[in-house]
Image 1 (spheres, rainbow, N blue to C red):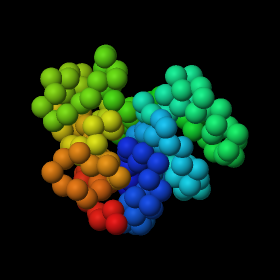
Image 2 (image 1 turned 90 degrees about the horizontal axis):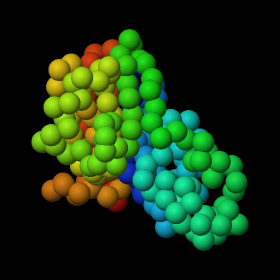
Image 3 (image 1 turned 180 degrees about the horizontal axis):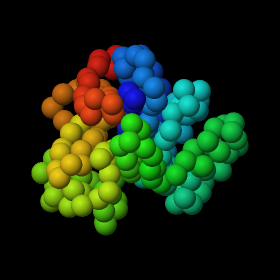
Image 4 (image 1 turned 120 degrees about the vertical axis):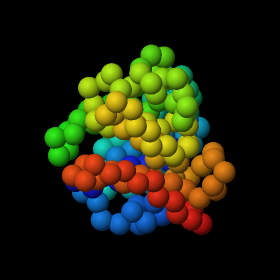
Amino acid sequence: MKIGIVSDIHANAHALRRALEDMGSVDMVLCAGDSISEYRFCPETVAILRERQVQLIRGNHEAVLLGGRNPQYLKKCQAEFSADLLDFLSTAPLSLEMSADQARILMTHASPLPPYEDYVYAGSPILRQVGTLPYEYIILGHTHMPMVHKTNGVTVINPGSCSEPRDQDRRGSYAILDTAMREVEIRRFLRD
């Protein structure tokens, strides 16, 4: 199965469209959170994710909007935007476990181990511990920096950000996971 993976879209419908066009035909698309920004709900971005049947999880920005930490903005969104788009986001889980080609996959926005809100970068000490988890693939977001890290049979994938990269490459990024071939590829594309 070929799985396209995006993360940290931050309400940029144009960058999301470019990433989806660039990735071409895949069997499934996953989003590792922060499809919106806590102070910018983009109905167009959420509509694209829903129309493409993207399996998504909530990141820290969805948590702020939907978790009661920004009640004024949530009320504004409820008054201005379609309820089904807000429902689509609010029913997204905090993490997702699935299987593809007999590979167990966990997707979570930040760290898969406590403290769960931590940023996991290449070289983070927590990467030594993920090899004890019962998955072949762990998909993360949050850092806006692409990464593929292997330890003890577990591959950690961060697709980076399709709209707000934070590394030296200003292009957007996403990942393709081929579970049949057991290959991961980080791809870059021009956001403009």
